[in-house]
Length: 352
Image 1 (cartoon, rainbow, N blue to C red):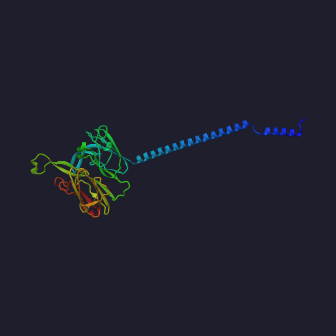
Image 2: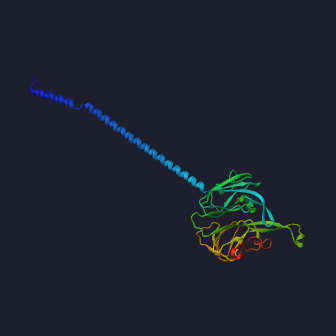
């Protein structure tokens, strides 16, 4: 028979055996906890990868949006021009017509005026019987734009068109005309002014005008008895301003106190000493000279063939004046006045 002490000991063992966990259960719980932690870690890593992917996609989308914005801005700044090369009769002075080559039916061609930084597209449509080309005189551009004409490129055959595209990076006064291989076409009228205005530099003038000096050889039938004995016509050079000879050149109207800029391009074959009576010029730029160079003041400025000169003056002397060459043969028509390169400059108050 068991003693009372034995019974108590037996009950204690039974209680302990029912309350303490089994060793295998502890191991299973630890394994489950590790698996759960590992799963959570994997889920966190997957979330990080997804976040990185989202960031990468957002960055690419932002770059794409920036590219689209840049393209839209470039499209907004693009300036497009079309030049039709064609032959037509042009009236130099009343009653004097010559067979000329023109851009858009004009001599000189239309003035192209853009702003620094603009994307320029100039399409030349050749309606002549022979090939032609294009040169943007004074502009530093890639060879593909301003190099010598070549087949399949800037050599424009009769009936064909070609587009010249470039960025107007430098402000200034330039001009366009056929390349050296078609130099005779320029002498027959193919040229025009190309002006690039500065983007951020303030203007020092209220108005500006482009004046292209030209030259043409014309013929007159003899009119005097002495000359009538010679059956041949008399040929002589006729000098022009913007395709016209005096008195057909439109007058230059001024307002007192305003500042004027003249952009003069000499497309003739002779040097021209140009003067504006009653005023003095400030020489702002010569054939692309740096605008920061010291300016000089002159009452007469000689412009050589192919050169371009930017001149400024203040309209401070009301009256009727003459902007003309100081060489009589250039400022007359075969010795007759008015004629040739002579532009009337007048103030409205002087006409009252």
